[in-house]
Structures are given as structure tokens and as C-alpha cells.
Length: 290
Length: 182
Image (cartoon, rainbow over all chains, first blue to last red; front, side, top):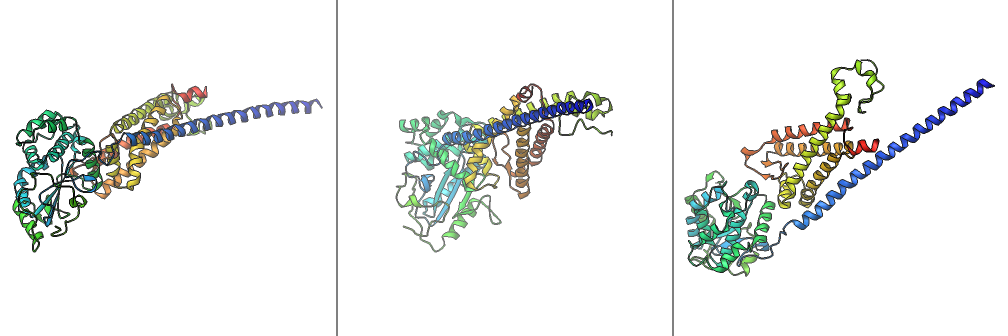
């Protein structure tokens, strides 16, 4: 009898201990679930807030203002030369990119001539990705100044002046906007109070950002990217190295049998935003569209 | 080795002084009181990595999106959500690790994230595209001579080891976890 009683007490004590242990295990599991839940909630909220905040902070890919005469989807492209020329040269270049400077110093006279002969329609995408790689503001300021020059009708001349006076890639001289204005004095008629205020107020900043975002999505990853009628020709067209002579030859070959466009310097005034505005810069311009 | 029912490998040691004498020096380090200090260092180290990685990507959303796009793995519709959200995920992980809340789950997520990064970089390398990993800001296309895939992968493997240590030894000093357990 007493034996049995002792046994009963022992098991009751054991049971209590087991219950307590089970309760502790449940509590601990519950605590763990709460921690797990809060961790996942913190991460989910952070990501959600992040996406919303960054969406609001990111500049729109549609510009609020575009320079006069800009063409293409969202007016992101600066045209130079006759829109009715049989061939189109699409140029992606960054004001700070040294290879672009080399290209321009070597090819600008040839390209200007081809345009003035009515053979070639220049389509310029002024991108600004060097600022990301090397940090700085020179590409964006330079691109904005080029847009200001386009707005004033002096894109070609100012574009050629900028590349002739390009600073070393690692030196961000053009973060100082006064240098861009100083260079504008080399283009007779460009340096007006309107131009200076356009450069200083970063008037086409949203356009510059939109052009860069368009380049981001283009799939082209370096500058200069040069396309003749949509086909890359830099640094090589097939097996042939690009040279001024080869460029003339390729344009003439592409234009064979087609009517040249309007001759004369078309860069003196911005092209009217009429039919040209619908031209896709990546597509060849239909022959003799005009 | 003698049976050690006290310390299954997934449990952080520290309270099992009775068997310490039988342990190899390695076991003493991984299970002994020193382990909590090692874990604390790993936790704070990983927190610094995530904070650095996240903060570097926050400043310019367009750059972050382009870094993601450059891998050419995600459809355009996912490029921005990932580019915008990832830095905040990294910063949130850094915060959790600094305060030591849910260290094990934070370490598991860190490890998964790092494995994803390693896979992404390897895939870019294997496909022969030339990009910067954009791990600590920047990113996007670079010249073929400027790719650093091997260094980037080795660096991420180092971070992965920190995360894996914490998955198996999540107990650390001065942490919310320790405070909650007390």
C-alpha cells in the first residue's frame, strides 16, 4: 500500500516536471515564431518601402522639357543634317568619354560634310554614364549644355568645340558649369544670357536623365556606339576598320541609287518638330522620304 | 570520439563544461564559450557588409536598376523592383544583425542572397558578358579587361562563410536574441 502510494507520488512529480518542460518548450517555440515573424515582417516592410521611395526618387524616363527640334520617341534624340537624307548615322556618345572625343576629332569634319551634301542624317544620343563610373557631374552638365546649344540652334558647332576641348576622363572639369559657358564663346552667337541661364539652371536635366535611361535599356553598353542605318560600324563594320574614307565609302554604297536629301548646313537652325519627330533613330530612314 | 549527446551540432555550445576535457581543440573553439564571441564578430562583420552594400546602392535608383539590368537575367518588369528593393533588404539585414534579432533567420536569408549573387556573377562570367557586379554600388557594363568575376565570387564566398557560421552558431553576445532568451 505505502509502496504503491510512493510510486504514485513519484509519477505525479514526474508528470508535473514533464508538463513544465513541455510548457517551456511551447513557450520557447512561440518566442521563436514571434522572432521569425518579426524578422520577416521587418524585411518585407523594408523592401516595400524601398521600392516605393526609390520609385518616387527616381527621375522620370519622360523628360519634362526637351530641346527644340529634338526627335524620336519622347524627343530624346538631337538631329543634325537633313532629315530626308537616304542614310542615318546614329551616334551614342558621352561628353566625358575619351573614345568619343577621339572619334569626334577624327570624324566630325567628314560627318559634317556628308550631312551638308545631303547624304547623311545625324541622330545624336547624348548619354551621361561616365559620371556613374568615374563619379562627377561633367557628363550631365555637358549633355545639358549640348541640349541648350541645340535649343539655341548651335548644336553642331558647340558639339565640335566641346570635343575639341575635352578634359581628361579622370578630371571632371565640366562639373564647373562656367567652363562650359566659356567654351560657348568659341561659337559666335551662342553665348547669350538665355544660354547661360539654361546651362546654370540645368534646364534640360530631366531630358539628360531620360536619354541616359533610354541608353541603359538600348542594350548598347559602350560609347561611342555608331550605327549606320541601324548597323554598328564602330570600331569595325564587318572586317573593315572605320576610317573617314571608309565611312564615306559605306555611306555612298548605302545611298547608291537613292536621291540625296536637302543640301547645305542644316545645323544652323533647329529642325522643325514635324514629320521628323516620329523617326525612330534605330531604323533606317526610308529612302527619299521627303 | 565518445558520444556527446549534450551537444548536437546545431546547438551552440557554452553550457556543456563537463565534457570540455574530452574535446579536440577545434571542438573547444566551435562549441566553447569562445564560439559566442566568434559568432558576435561574424554577426557584426556581416552587418557591416550589408550596410556598406545597401547604402552604396541607395543614392541613385537608376544606377541600381542598371546594375541589375546589366546581368541580362531578369525581365525588364522586374529590373526596377529588384534594383530599388535590394538595397533596402540589405540595410534591413544589417540592422537586424547589428541589434542581434533573429540572427539565425537573418543568416539564412543572407546565405540565400549571397548564393544568388554568386550564381548571378558566375552566370555573367559563363555567358561572356562584361559587367561590374554592382555589389557595392556602381555596376553595369565595363570593358572586358576590367571584369573581376573571380575576385567578386571569392569575396562573396567569404561573406557566405560568415553567414553559414551564424546559421549553425547563432548565439551571440550583446544581442536582442540573448536578451529575449534570458
